[in-house]
Image 1 (tube, rainbow, N blue to C red):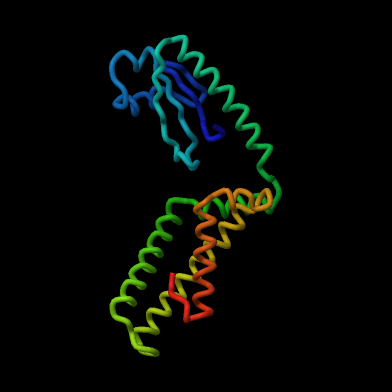
Image 2 (cartoon, rainbow, N blue to C red):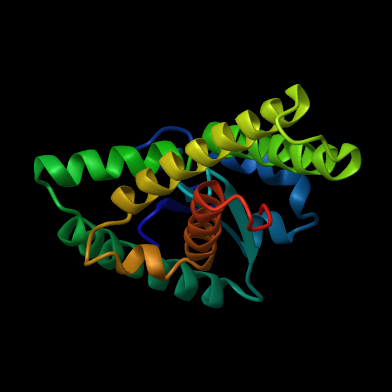
Length: 199
């Protein structure tokens, strides 16, 4: 709720400019008289988890639409106030937010996706060619595994810092981050003990 920037109804004027720009871009999502009579748009902030997406909702009557718009606007104000109170305004809190935004950005996710693909291909090649001990092929594959492990470890450290508020509860509430922690631990153990199978 705290990422909602505004809730608009058809023809409504807002302080943020011409509200019809959202309606024009969303017109194709709904059709008929519902667009002007019973519809409203929830607009999210740019850079948030919803990346500025607009969501068009249709009520069954004008009264229901007004009730929904009023209730959502009220909850947005409360949520934004709660978010401001929750945010740590200290230097460390500012750095934590910056790191979290960086590691959860689309660009970072694309980079990590590329690293995962590289790790998978490296393991696939290693399983197919079964390089001889101390051969050049084995050294190359071990180097790739080492680099991938270092990158994953750095990403994990950044995620730990970015989610370190409230005694790391945000980190451990995210099942994907916990999965990353387990995988990286196995990868680090695998680097130390070469007798263990690779992840």
